[in-house]
Length: 187
Length: 149
Image (tube, rainbow over all chains, first blue to last red; front, top):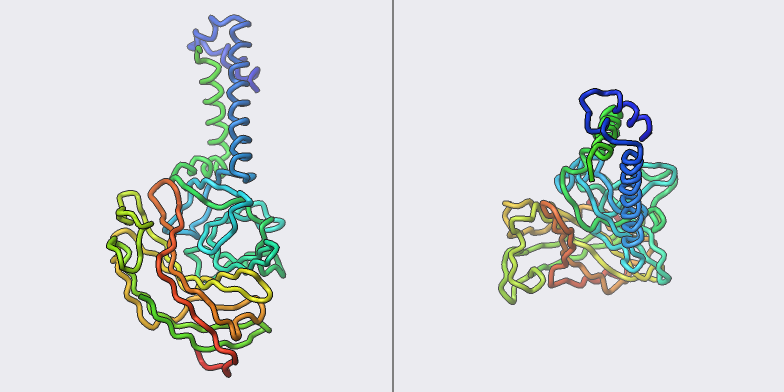
């Protein structure tokens, strides 16, 4: 991809800057780009380790937790085993067989002596609890369904992710512009 | 001060169902000693510039033979910034069915009701706070025949 972008750029007249770059400088910029991508990945993996969650940052996709969270809000999760699940907590969970995580609040828990726990959730803005959302025949959620507990949040920022999902052209445009910027920018 | 009147339990689908009516008097803004709800015993006002809303919930916590720990939310309320922070609710019925996982409510002497809340900021950390003051409710040893609820 980087090579294709570079080739496209070389053929554009107004990018004199790039024209003046010789091969070595171009490779250098490409390596820089690679480093940025790797660092980003490392930070993400690091977050996964620190929080114990497979997805430490999620975007709220529905309005079922309004007025606390709206579509596009960003949630920061932890999933540490030492933190027990208790009522009132906001959990992000996945229903078996479904990809999309759901952000709701814990309504009931029943925990056994050995730590096995089963719990029920409900969205603040929903009239009924989530039993209808669970898998056929499933009445409770378990620890294994949990992606994490919401510990902090920032509003609005996740809208970019939603836009990128709903309008793939927008995603490609953003990626293209980012790639352009990194390759052209002199470090 | 919260008073509670516990009514009766009824078995449904082989699980105990409890009915509790309660009064809630809470003064969430008040920081003086000796009153019902504190904000972590320091003098911060709860509804500061970064608080969007409080999600209040009344939960019952108890132990049964089947399960070492049970927590059931009986009632909840969203309190937005600007809403009256003083709650004075009388004779409330629980919003959600108080089902046990099994038959652990019958004769259970020690059900603790606590008021807690989730502080939802405009941006930042989401803490859960438990109000000081809780009430213990015992459930009777016998079931009642079903009455209209």
